Each structure stands twice: as C-alpha cells, then as structure tokens.
Length: 181
Image (cartoon, rainbow, N blue to C red):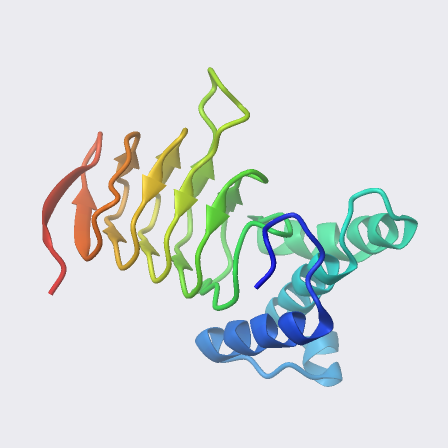
C-alpha cells in the first residue's frame, strides 16, 4: 500500500472502492454514480487519490466541479488521502475530518463526528487505527493516536492517545472503561 498523500495506483483505487462498496452496501457502476450520491462521493474520493497532487489541473477541476458539491450535499468534509479502504458512513450528515488526520481500514464514522487538529497546533491531527467505531457526535482532537479495534462512544471527546487495542472509550474527556468483547 502507498503512503498517505502520494498517488495510489489504479489497482489500489479499485481495491479501496471495493472495500467502501462492501461496507456501505452500495453498488459501484455508472448508473449508481449517476443516481446515488454515496456512490458518487466514494468514486470521486478514490479517483482524486489516484490522480494525486493538489497542483494538477485535472485534480483541481474534478475536485471543484464534482467532489466538493457532492461532499457539501452529503455534509461530509472528508478530504482525499485521509482514509484507507472500507470507510463506513452509515448515513448523510455532518462529518468533519481534518486533511492531516489518518484513519485505518474499515473504520466507521457516525454523524456529527469531528476528527481534527488542536487549535494550538494545527499541524498535528489524529492517527486512528483500523476497525475503529466513532460514535455519533464524538470528537477526536489534537495529536492523538488511537489503536485498532477501538470503540469511541457517542459524544465522547478524545484529547489523549489510547494505543491499546480492543478497548471502549467514553466520556468528556474520554477514558477507557473496559476491553471490547
């Protein structure tokens, strides 16, 4: 797999789209692109990752004419290169992910979630492992690392790192309550 912020291959794009399609129960085809905004969002997200570079003309055209309008319609602020394949978005609604944040494979991000940088240091954003569930209204803020197979409860605010795997985080500020079962 490629590093974040570097263009991905067509093969990797197809792999990520297949994972996204599987977890979101959407069929990826020309017809679904034309009729389903979720399908359109994922196809454009992965295509922009394949094009690479904010500076190419074609990238900017597709981003501004197609990707940004569909993102606004769905109320998603999820820039390319922030997620690996298998991103699960249960339904429409406000979801904000900082362009410097990184999510592993098969993460679910619920409505109202914010994954962002600290106001004091906007250069540092969360790094989240694979198979993480982020509940409704949860916030993950700052230079935070989250392990894999972690559940972040609804309206929790995560301000510090939890690198353990298979745990549940709840509260404001978040604290570990037990091991996942």
